[in-house]
Length: 582
DNA sequence: GCCGTTTTCGGCCCGACTGTTTTCAGTCG
Image (cartoon, rainbow, N blue to C red; front, side, top):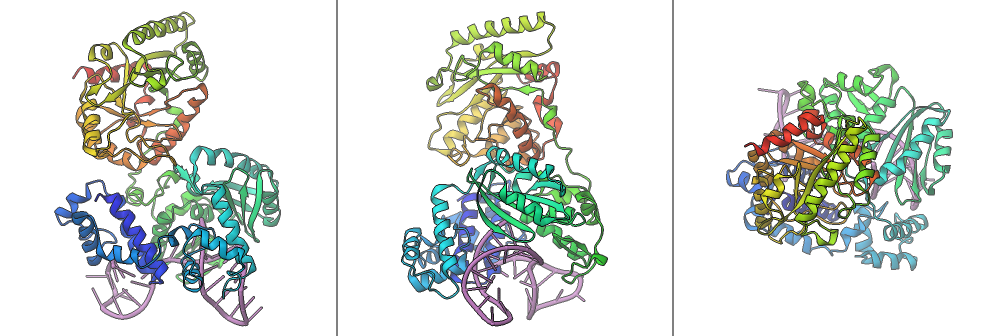
């Protein structure tokens, strides 16, 4: 078993223990160990074989043994017994809004409820309301939660969350009683998938702000509303939470609600280590629970707060407790790439294959936006479903691109299209011969039809990287967010091969992909692998994805120098030539 | 179940909201 499989079993054990009514800290110990495993960059198998689990954060004697058993044998009797002792349907009950382990346990023990269906039936039969600790309202809420679950997925792609957040943020900014406001939560941290939207506002009139928040257009229902906080369900199916604080409290609240939870825990611990206390209302010179303004250490913004805790300002994208504290302490935080530094995209399609727009339109658009270049990398012939080009068509397209470029030059424009291909990685090599690839300026190699075998897929991608005409690998893992998992693939081995061959790796900026995953970029960067932030555009409006992709690159700790398409046209051409000259 | 130079036992981040209570437990973030 690999680290992700082991981690997901540890998380499940933690949840099962909660359902059993075990010590919640024991449950958390399993979750913590899972996080540690997920963050590993070496194969877990190797670590276990070399007996190096010892001393890892959150992994003691008991977890060492369990992890070792899972890695070496592929199963764990303790887990299997635990799992068998409870009906499988209890896990899905936990996903319901307002239903946690204690309630699930009670429903199961008292009413024998072990699935969403039996819970729904019990509510309709009025049996749940009669339980001690439950009531009419709880029962109605559970029914609502079941209906919600049926109607909406609880996760949303970043781009959908951004679209839903923009009008809310705009209306908060315009509100006369709002002093400062911001999105917070996973949206501010630029996670690829978002659960719900969080907003933080400072105001002297919280009631008025909350009022306008719950009454704004697009609100389908109000889930909760108090003096300082409200939750609504938007018509788009996304939940939005607003928290209102005083302006003095704003920096602390913004940091608190931006998270991540793991990042906040370390922040609190740093406060405790100084004999202070940190919460959403302030940083206080007291180890006791307090909100005494006299004890508050004044911070005007988040940067002040980080400074008080001995840290450089940590950009929201990095707040995942994945090394940012050590870096911020030692002034080693990266200077993250800005999306405005991007000069173009090196993986895009036109109407020659499955794109929508003509070469001329694409060129006009790129020029208008002030970009420097745009590579046309239509599909190769194996992707017949996408009208992949055969070698003859590719040669025709090279001429067509030259004509567009000639026209641009005649008009005095700096912008250029680049010739290229997204060549399919087939079972026994690339879809085009090297002599054709050599005549193209940009070659992206992508795996579209993977094998079921991890070693086979890994081998194919490594072989593609070893081809001197291939500049970069496209959408390496093949995942589609909220739709399809990554191919079976040893991504680390492929990254290593790219490092060895000087092959770049694409950060596919499509909000459906964001592939490579941000969690792998720190590793790729440490190996010296360069990133290309590509739109994989099929329409003009997909240019906007450059901004999304840059955000993901920031989340992956990437700086301007790590991203190839921050180069101007001339140095880019030089960089493109470099691999071929080896 | 993990952790530790004030501790090998007794902590483990902490506050708001809701509903069911009549002072609090459960859930959520």
